[in-house]
Length: 406
Image 1 (cartoon, rainbow, N blue to C red):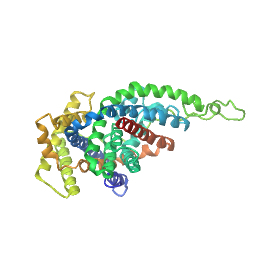
Image 2: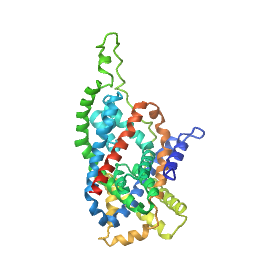
Image 3: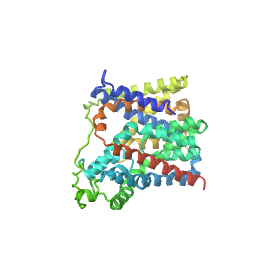
Image 4: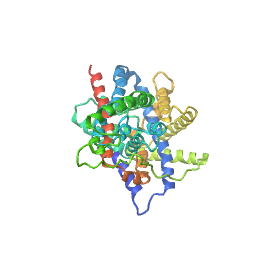
């Protein structure tokens, strides 16, 4: 299970944090640009695997739709009481109302402000998920898959967490366990992730967050905690001989180090796409020990569709490029369109996991920017941060397991 998904992140992380020849802020800025492009190229290849399999998924319709219930409510039901009991206060709301990806981070800043406990919770889970989420989900998916309790298709549905890197990590682990079902696992996970990206944010804002806030009040009363996480009796000194506790640092503002901006010119963009494309071809050739001319042409087509997705995301900001690229490549490769055979011919030798490896390495490479913020995190939030991932994944997989075997 440790090769190659986890090693890609670990090796990148070691290079990104070493002090012998530190990675500069400018280098991390470039790595971030390459990461954004690389992840979308990976999703583009996943989309080309979904299209030809669309007819197989009609019987899985209820499972695909109901797994979103697990993603929305699993974190709140399981992780929230633990966070409140540990004394995180209102930080618990931000840490457990979702798995806190970029869209939720932006919403928390606008809704609660950067000095709020809710924001601190969202930020902490976002940061830890960005750095270690792919590794954690890979290990969790491998562990659950090895137990033989879950149908691998149910686990694949559970991987639709809204994070491409986490999905990639889980898909890699499950594909090693079930090589004969690797294609179906990848397609189901991508389709589930697409649904989560489309409806997950709105479900989180309008369903999960209100539920989380209501249950937070219940658990706070039950555990006798106030909004700073302190025991109410100790905080207010209601017991004889007890000194009121000092307020928690609810105004602490967390932030990652800011890297210098990159002047994005057509020449820079062209170079970035070229680097991503060449890296994908080399990694695929090394991993499969083969190279055919159509591989390079297939990567070129994926890069063009990636560029189109970024363009559409700028024109329609409410729909991210990840949603656009999955939708476009799925439709183009669907059996009912004449482009299906052409897309399949160009991409049939491209291994989706190998194409995604450079992007995972770049995640580790940027760790050095976040070291200071990581050091400032409490062990409690680190413990709680991985509960939403686990709860969301397991709850969605359980619902998928139930609906698949009705």
